[in-house]
Amino acid sequence: MFTKPSGVTFDLDRAWRVDPRVSMRPEPFGALLYHFGTRRLSFLKNPTVLAVVRSLDGHPSARAACLASGVTEAELPAYARALAALASSNMISERTDPLFSARVAEDQRDSQRQKKEDPLA
Image (tube, rainbow, N blue to C red; front, side, top):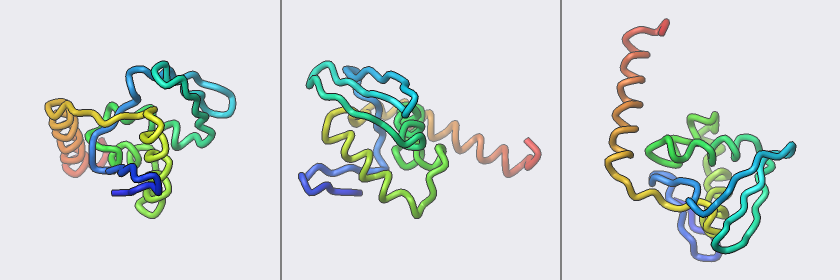
């Protein structure tokens, strides 16, 4: 768990998503995020952060999205800070659909089992 100086706590082990009021536009430098509710603009210049943000909705946690996007355990604190900044500006919000999270987690466990059983798959 990471707490920003502003007091916002970001938990990598919770499910997150791009806020439904946010539009994400690809740009040559990465992406531009615009929040229609707050009218705030964010720029994502790191391609890995962009990959993590795009994949948040498809993973049971932010940690899983980070790891699936190639973030190492050692890099996780830096990515937690980046995601915390996006959360504090309401660009991403916590996902509260436990059924989805459980289904995705089960799918990932099945995929890992298959890889262990058949390393050539």
